[in-house]
Length: 331
Image (cartoon, rainbow, N blue to C red):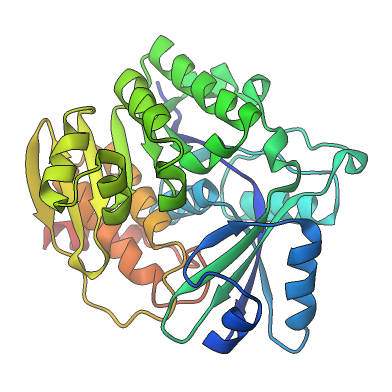
């Protein structure tokens, strides 16, 4: 009997959230709406400039946000990521455990580096610009992947951000190999458009060889397929895997299942912060898939959670949505 819905693998990052105006982003020479890998000094300079702003700390990282969405839906999850034995690392561990996520990876010694951090700047147009210092999260490797936990899981979820490091990429491949070995389906998110171009061939091979379920957004699937037409790009990825879920902002999502193309409408809302929308969509979809709902119904629940997260600050859902599942999927 499988005891846990999802085994997640990703970067473990403590998020610092701040609302700023567009001038702040320009003044610090940042690319609006992007995620940029930075050194500790660059990140510290930006944080110093935020000394007069109200800041919030959250346990984050893309895949961790997805695990939170699974838990908020009433599901269960393991999470594998690397933190340090420092204040941020302990905060991260306690924060995930409080959210109902199983997280028991051995931390690194502080002498080997600090826990990874991400400064998330949200502007009034709901766009978020992220500066990420990966810290010891890049020291996650294949030896951290727990085969026994994979055996106890219904599906594996791997984030594309892990492709930026040799060790983290090896951890991703190891998780996928163990999934195939033990009959556990593998899901994969492209994570960000900036990853798709340099790793396009790697992603295509990984998807074809290991993946049962794919998550991406419209720009990512166009880059992945090198096709500008969204429907044709979606069909391209659908030929490589049995299920693909493609988010398309306020237009909802596209589902490709066994080659069949379906649009699933979103939920109209006024967005204040788009940070975490894709992560929550993936979490909602994975929860529904692991609870025997169809791909179309699963995308609908994913769309609902995405519409909820964009109405609040930060990348993680705050409330228990499990009581809403039946009514939302019945509509």
